[in-house]
Amino acid sequence: MRLTPLPRSWPLAVRVPLVVAVLMIAVSMLIGQVVLHRLARDQERHIADLAAAYLDGVSTAVLPAAIRRDVWEAYDALDRARDRYQGLTIVFAVVTEPSGAVLAASDPRRFPVGSALPADLTERFGPDGRLTIDEREELAFLARALREGTIPVGRILVELDIGTLIAERRTVRWTLIGVNTALTLLLAALGVLLVRRMLAPLAILRAHVATGAEGPIRPVDEAVIVRQPGEFAALFRAFNRTARAVAEREAMAARLAEEEKYALLGKLASGMAHEVNNPLGGMFTAVDTLARHGADPAVRARSIGFLRRGLSDIRDVVRAGLVTSKGRVGEAALTREDLDDLRHLIRHEVERRGLTLAWQNDLPSEIPIDRTMVRQVALNLLLNACAASPPGGRVTLEATIAHGTLALTVRDDGPGLPPAARATLAAVPDAPPPGGGLGLWTAARLAAALGGRIGEGDQARGTALTLTVPFGERELARVA
Image (cartoon, rainbow, N blue to C red; front, side, top):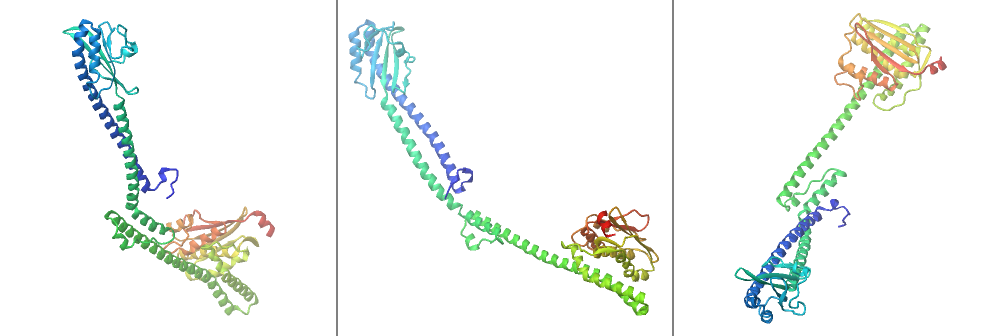
């Protein structure tokens, strides 16, 4: 297991024991300080008790000599007391007069009789009866006043060597550090093993979750679940329920996508059939005209030309696939005759409903716009206008050119454009709206493919829809 420099990215099996180890170190340090403090207090109390007993004996023996100022008797008392108290290592003991001069000392060479104690030494002794300890020099200092009743007759000053006690403290400190360090490392290593074992189910869960990146999420086997602790078993079963729910949703989404694909194919087929059926109606009319007036050369030529254009439209009607795909706009230019042919295509519908058709075609001989797509848009708008107009109504087509833009307007006397149709023109959806409106939707999609749009004009009665397609004035001048 390779660890990165950032502890945040370390595995949980390492971080948890590490945190526990740090807490154990902190607790062990606190306990060690408490133990050392308690040891120091016990040692100081023990030294103080021994020193007090020593001073009790010495003061009793030295007091008569101090009253008489008998140097030798005082020295003899100090010398006899040196070896009587086990557990005390006396560096020196000094008996001073009330004036502070030395009366007798266990080390006469260091403290001659009648001399004054050094000021830095006397400062190291605290008040009478209080033990003062210097751990750095491993020394202790204790003083007691000598009195005859209420009259002071001198002081006894004792310096003790406590190196053994300080060494004992040091030994205890390093023992605590060593034992705590060993226990911490041992328990941390044990914690890593235990935590890794406890978190082993998470590795199983992570492996199963990772399968979702390559395909369906694989549930955890029940045989694996029964071997896990209660919490992880419940987690695994919850994960399996989630995995099954995700799989069901994905399967449902796949079925819906498949159904939507077939629905779109059906709508495309319906639209294609609609577009093919439009020129077929006019072609049947042309055939009827040939059957009745085929002997007239002019009628025959006009009808045959119309049939050729109708067949050409059927051949090119596949371009209506631009409605649902990124097809390429056709290259055949729009002519004035292409638009006039639409009068024959809708004549059957106009006569069947008893409508009046007003036609104003002011287009030049040729315009650089795809003829098939413009004819499909115009034909759909005309058929919708015929269907919306009441019997005896009026349908109008106006086609003009202004400022390099084709403007083709179809008017009717119907009840007006429904709200759904207005929404289709405002934002053309990717699929036909439900409940009809396929012709207008097809016309709007074709207009968008041409780079134009269909807009609704203001009209007191009925509906006026205008197809506008820009193509540029210079291109018009070149072909005119």
